[in-house]
Image (tube, rainbow, N blue to C red; front, side, top):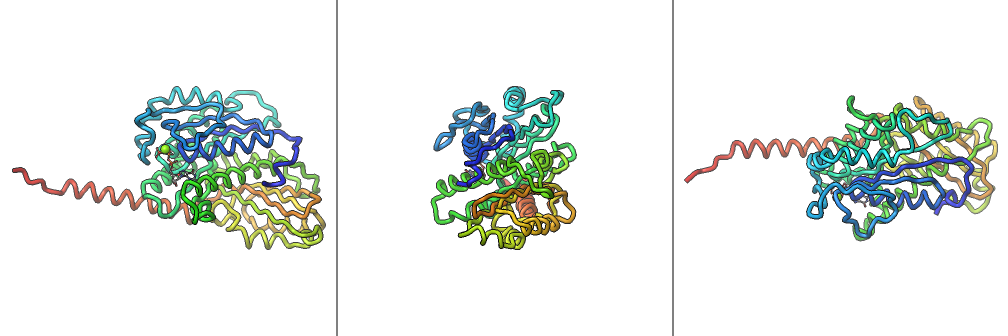
Length: 379
Ligand SMILES: Nc1nc2c(ncn2[C@@H]2O[C@H](COP(=O)(O)OP(=O)(O)OP(=O)(O)O)[C@@H](O)[C@H]2O)c(=O)[nH]1
Ligand SMILES: [Mg+2]
């Protein structure tokens, strides 16, 4: 467990977690648990066809089951989930109005900070539900929510890839869409750690990593930095989640422990950060192309840490990346970052998903035309 979770914070933040579909609800359940453990105000809503979870999800304050006992899944049929949800959109809107922390025209102070997070995946429910819930929240709140989206592994069914491609396009890039920042977590990476485990256990453990990474990133932003040059604050963190950050986003998280304070003080952490970036990011991408972002670096600081932080920030040539440098008394180096507004051109996995989605459409079209052309002999 990260030391960040044991810290007490003076600043405050509220978070709404809306889990959609099996993966989204399960992961959301863990995020809620971690946030509460860190004394963060959380409101939450689980959205799924049915309550068919093993083990049961238990941390949500409200739920919206839109299917029936017979119909526990759309079986990756995005259009079906979309249709079922649209029929109950008014009820869903009611639930969402209760889970958000403010409405479009509410008067709010600058310190009234709340994140609305939707968690979904490439399942039929996860994809359709993320799209519908994002549109509704954008309408209710006046700003798009942030979507945490689990990217399917490379060898998963093409239908899942197709759903993911459709959802990602709508959420971030569709002119008629909500313009959400979308934070991607790649199952390819998450599950790689546990490739020897049984799938149920591997999923459970990867959900734990995802939830902990996201929570500690939020907690890192809650620290107060007194550094004279790198003292970004919570408002800067929030800017990384605005409409301007629409597009793809990645979380980076690096934890190193050293034997002595001296050792950590002498480390060139900018080199370390970039050489281990791929290993420590939620999805492989050229993150230096991020438009917005926020980095918290916690380490025993010396004049060298300022220099190293400057080297990191400089690499983000075109982006407005804010950094907070926090001095700690323990021999740790902890970096947490959220990098958003990355154009898909710098995310190969995005095109892989799109290609697979398109190929699956091609196959369907081929099958369709074969069916049309096939001759049925009538006797
Ligand atoms: N990381 C992670 N991924 C999961 C988990 N469960 C499913 N997935 C992935 O999520 C995608 C499938 O989504 P599901 O959550 O099963 O589907 P759904 O959203 O419930 O939608 P339906 O198709 O209607 O059942 C695939 O890419 C799975 O690999 C989980 O617990 N953790
Ligand atoms: Mg399901």
